[in-house]
Length: 378
Image (cartoon, rainbow, N blue to C red):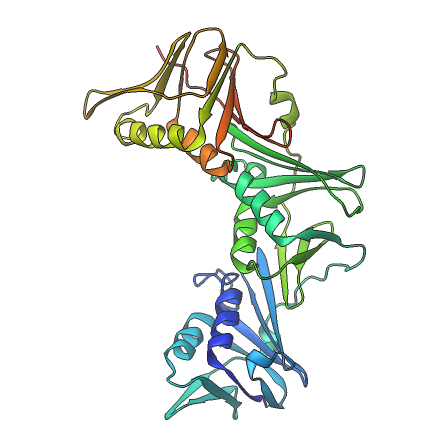
């Protein structure tokens, strides 16, 4: 029979982080619950939706937690309902006490609320991942890599493999992350300081976005472990499991071009704002494209919507070289690419009006490259 008291604010933070793995409308009803395990030295919260699972541990040694454990045990509680109740309680601390038949009494200040729980035996066991030879990464770096690539992954389930980010480690130190939805691509290369066993996996981009939300910036280091079907990201107190996608990821290296006809360097923010203005009009048209005209002394962007109006905008540039070119593309792809670029300038290479063009940060030639396929127009 569980009994403990805890700082309510810290408990809510841990509950909300764990809840990110729980879908309220899960096909398996038991997965809409949160599992609470209390041992003599710590409290562990577990949530899962079958795709991702999160274990969040609060040790009694954490001074901010104010965790006093009287007796141990495990129980399941309806996640959303329980978290809403805890959030509404009046006092800084709360007492959690299990009484008979999986019932729980929460006491905080002058409030006392009784909730019905479920038997923990109904909860599926998490698949274990072998925790040997971890890949050790800086959390902030990993979150940056996710931000630089995840947006280019597909949202269409018709080709499930493209909904993931392809992550490869070769030569024990050469790290590559790449995502494509077949209309655009984003790739980040990195040489790691800590060597690890080579791997080649495809991780759902949705899972990695959840990872970024759960692992806050105060968590400096994350350990990564692999099994044939899933991956585990682990810090001192959080374990984040996600299933891997099955199948062969397309060979994206062949899409990258070594030669180009035209190079233009733009100010990143200035180009992004111009594209956002163009998008407002293009979004109202059927084909939703922007036409970019590049001549020797003038670069301009054009959108023409018979229904709404038109945009003609002269673009500021830092430098340009090569041939004249006219190319049309979806402005959303360019806006999202520019959002991922942190440098002040962006270098865009064009080959022809029908071939993909590439973007690289102005201060970085090799390690971060994006590619956008143009739209053929009459």
